[in-house]
Image (cartoon, rainbow, N blue to C red; front, top):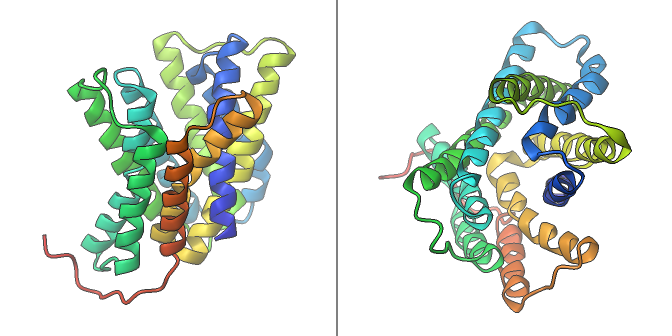
Length: 282
């Protein structure tokens, strides 16, 4: 549980760092190859002794992460950031759905936790507005959630027992290559300039990657993808609190109330209920 919350806290810093990246003249997409390339360079020595079969699974899981992130940015260019974030956090629902199709019915506490966290997210992020009627953008948002849910479940199925740092290195290598090719094809591949831009890159490499990703893998290995993904829905709450602390954003009553629902859902998700091996009757 602590590792999952630590991962959520680490990932929540990405929104703040993304804003800082734009402020110092480095587009968010242009920062991704350098963020992941730096982490891959630092962590690849931890992959020594890992079999090629396990490395292949690690790279495959990393590719799922890249596809989910790409779909997220495609949605972000068409609908609001709030609606995109709200759709992304349908990922726990997809984790529970995939688990059910795999033969593991979600427990009643998990189902209740999902409803509580979705209600809390509606209050924290806000309802979609009039600018969120782009069907393609909404479709990309749902696709990002579906792919991210697949990434979480694949991490549980394929990477449990693998060293978290080695898994992070493989994911980062996949992401560095993927986004370098993507930025190169779109003409957005640039070399960061100056201490400010490289400082933002270092921050992205440290908090939402070196800290958050191994913590997430460690949490999934210990409590499973379903429980870890429901705890991960606390990320928007931490983002709002960090924005209030460092960017002086105001805290709305709806945010505090929604945060309470999210935390209640995260706690409920840890209650061990009875789960059957039969798939859901759809």
